[in-house]
Image (cartoon, rainbow, N blue to C red; front, side, top):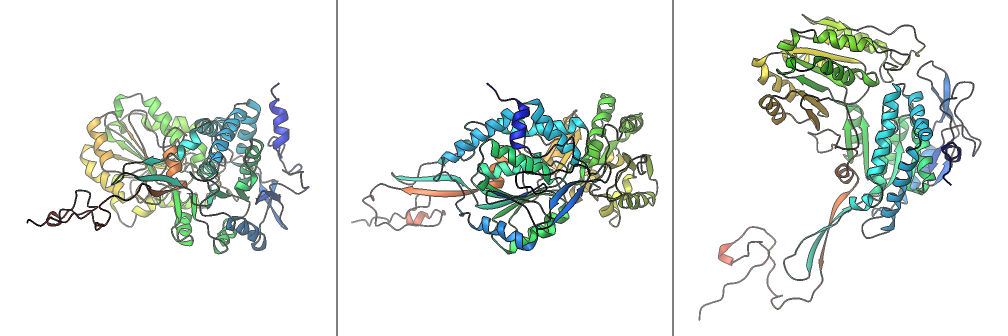
Length: 564
């Protein structure tokens, strides 16, 4: 008989997201210490000191979180030092673990198909990152689909080996995907299950041991997720979970060798981490994500285009790394009521259903400073918004801002003093709008060339010539093109990640997992007895030398026979 979901929840879960409050803060009972705990080397452990996480909707203390100190950090370093550089499994060692993770993935997918368990995680997400219920449920569904994709034999297929013929009988060059050993995931607040969860699983699938440092505001979601994984059969010794501030976690890099860190978050922190790790990073950093509406859009369904623009700019209160920051509108569209349509969509957003909510990384003072900068520009317009939200209990340490669109004349983007400020990513419900006409195409490409970050972009046009021109001269890692193009959307069914940087990370797909969490290892098997001409000189260059009769592969010098 199938076990009821409510009973399963009782067996793995240690928090009730519906009841967390200052009167009833989140706690764990197995050790009698407040939640969340630390997972170190397979054991749940508390810390000497704790700190409060406050409810972003009302400022109440509702989660007590370990404040890991340097002495306690040593336990994590000791755990990571035990990891061999060949990983916990690889194509030649402990291969049954590929099968094990395929089965774990199947079980996780099965449990997340249960309504009560799916909604448990969705509500927990909503409590720490207040966003619309559909956004929360959607995040869990993406993770569920990811586990469905990597159930059964799919994990072992990630480590598929490729062999090809050698130079002679018995030689067989063979390509393997090899783990790194001890690795780390450092993740942001905005998708507290999807980003750290999927990156963590990619690391585990490929044979690494991973330490996870989620954002302090939302780290409780990852603890619940690890407990679910353990319930489904994951050995707790395969990962470490740490709850601490970012500057505390940085110290672990001086205590042990972490072979690679996958970081998702701001570009400023990404560069700092790259220096700290001597470049051993894979980054999905922030982006000033743009959308351009082509000359043919005026003939399309403007209600749909406006709805998608609203979703891209303001869903999750503009706190997606792929949020639409910059909208370029063709002049023929500007003559319609398009701006009014976006304004009408944005006006529907409210705190009651959390279609607009707290801004967890910016205070209102920063947003007011940005508005004053816009107001200093000749010809600017506040299309809508530009003000703080009122009538709420969101604490002052967070921002609360109306969905906002500022119009900035096209000419200002060519002022070298203004440009850096104009393309600053504001992780909030704020976008900049400008207009262009057909004669501005080369100038538009000049703007795109100067934007330093290349995460997402959208080219809303079915005009093949227009679209191809822009696609050919831009480098955004995830670019949507066509009538329904958007900037947001990081599902499990396609690559999502930046481009234009050798350190770029991807998420969700088999290709992304292989790229981020493994390296190429070549083993050349050479097994049969030597040939008769084994005394020939081996030639190490691939350049052919006719005078010496080198074969086309450049492998062996064949000396000319002297004529008798």
